[in-house]
Image (tube, rainbow, N blue to C red; front, side, top):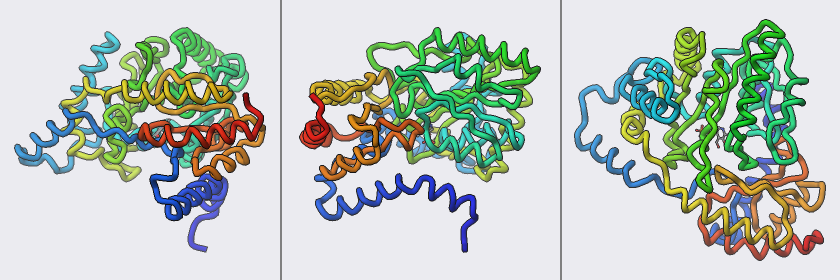
Length: 395
Ligand SMILES: Cc1ncc(COP(=O)(O)O)c(C=O)c1O
């Protein structure tokens, strides 16, 4: 048996997601990719903004000696300084390059944070619906995931959270705008969360770190202002990337920002640097660090996602689907008309529509539609959504 038992078990636990993916591949071969409506992955169809190509072109036509060499494990000083300047502008807080670590995407960043903070048996509080990889990341460092459900509107349930907190709680991991629900946690919730975590730290005499996973932070609708965690809680770290806001998921570029108000900020920076190196990332990709240094104020055109969101929501609502309208990101998480979300997703599959059952996010009874696809894919899938709605007795 080649692969480790643990890996085998995890692969089996996630096997139906893979089965769905494989069925999708088969359908694409059988009917042609254009006739399969793939809403299963958060892989944005948008291209990066024009400024990305301008900066990239300038860099490769004006190469600087040493620009592809090793660097400090935390990343280039000028890149981190550019991010610190942008964060100071956004938050009014005293950021410096020493609060920033460049990482290999948000996924890499979360692993770096967990390796830095977790001792075996430490607990990580996670809220369902959740990004399924969180469970595997926690396990990587022998942590223990404590899953706490959100409320009916997918907002944090602070009472449930308070009950789930223990002296072993080391990390509280939130994700807003949320994948899969599209919810942005309101400022009042973030403030109350900060208050609760301070109380729990005092009660247990421990340090609890709020880790905010924010790759969708810039993808907001309807003029919403993003409620940052920094002012509400000192022991906080933000993990983010430019996978979605600059449409660069394959380039694997992101950063960790440690709250300047965190008393352990200096020690944390050293720990994060060590973890980045010893996890084998060494440092984030050099070329992309040079690029994003100059793109901190740039975001993809959100009007395109807004148009897709509005079109999809209007049509699905008219068919009787129930959901919370996304406030950010590019995922919609409707209720399934039958309780068996896996079987519902299979009936969509029969219409060549690929989605993901809520069970994959720890929340059965829902399904996720990633609408970061071509408009024509959404338009052509509507008939199938309608047929399945009728079949399951929706209005
Ligand atoms: C909630 C969440 N966190 C982290 C990630 C990983 O992002 P990255 O591609 O920057 O590693 C994703 C990717 O889809 C995500 O949805």
